[in-house]
Image (cartoon, rainbow, N blue to C red; front, side):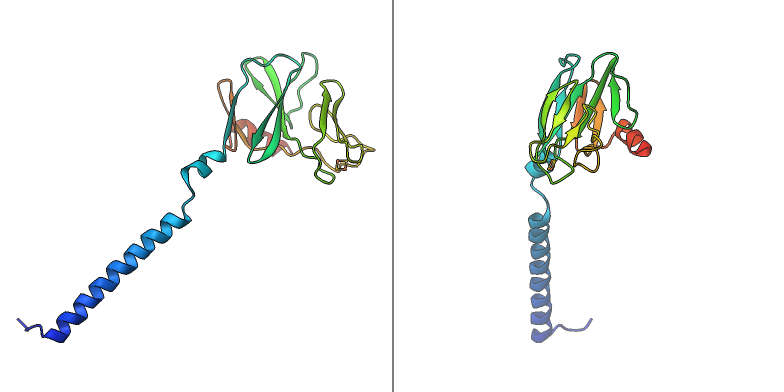
Length: 167
Ligand code: FES
């Protein structure tokens, strides 16, 4: 067995210390890059719509954006590109930011839809832009997932995927 001289021993000890230091540095870097748990959960907003009545409008914040939820009235039809069902109710959701220049349109009523105060843009209650007004396209539909009577914005469920295939 070869004898380890003092120089070899010091070299190995130094390499060991350097290796441990590098590993500790990598662990610290990973901790810095990983999002905080609160940031991860902040990407999702869950709403229970079991108490919404026909024709009701509701709004929540999702990732800092206003997102509306409307439960349509009977007889308002079903737009497969923008509506989905929970039990017997027909719902529609969208990011309430004008597709013209980014103002926040006001919801007027289930029959009148949305009016943007900036340049008079109009959207139906389904979030579709009305021809002849400035917005060039409908409201964006946020990704969502259904679980019973709960809608989770930020997650991708099969209803959302089906809508995106139609778009
Ligand atoms: S920003 Fe809404 S109509 Fe111009």
